Image (cartoon, rainbow, N blue to C red; front, side, top):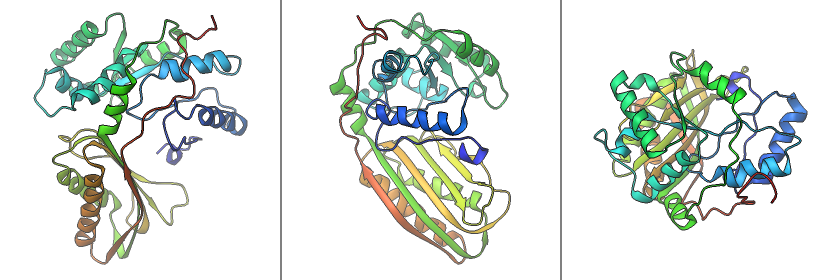
Length: 322
């Protein structure tokens, strides 16, 4: 999605920043040499935690002359938060997955309530109050990308607030590892070709709905899809995301014209058996083949697994040597 909008990007494959610390530094050096950027935006794997001790403090101690770190922002989905706090009906993750969710918020310098436009004023205040009660002393901000509410304030904080320097939090790596393993992981690429032009946006929405319905027994953490046309010269893509099982699949980027062929990339994390994620993918592929006349979809690559135990490259309690 970032490349499609003209940003220079590097990917850290094979694990999170904490376990691929050297790859993270190498990626930053590549971007520095290639584009001379003023700032990096680094987004870790969604189930990663303990970033202060395993990423922030090692970067500051080892590479402090090269990089200046901003405060760590942790974005909170407001509906998911209401469900976990018992402020709203809905499915929840199990206790060990919620442990990861809570530790992510606990180590934040700035707790950012994203998508604040989904809540009215009373619900938003109630969520802020609950976050302040459970995580005292944290800076809490609500934003909405849709209407730009709070965005300028957030950027100002990143530009002026120092990154935290207190002792890193304690974390139970046994519970962390078990929670990560509960979130099955599935990555796939699908080659899609048709005799006639078709609407890739509609294809993504159908595929997502079929997979969501197939995963009725697995709570979705995220389901992300992109479609890249074969004949795109400008890097245009269609992109879709689902961030809870009870949400309607939403297109983030759309293709403006019908196409004949391209590549579909699917990434799914859900609390459930990884084999069920693969079956949901296969059900989705069958659905799009039946729905679009003359369309052939072939799964070229698929892997499904439970993540192994996190093994950080570094883990420091403070950003400075004793």
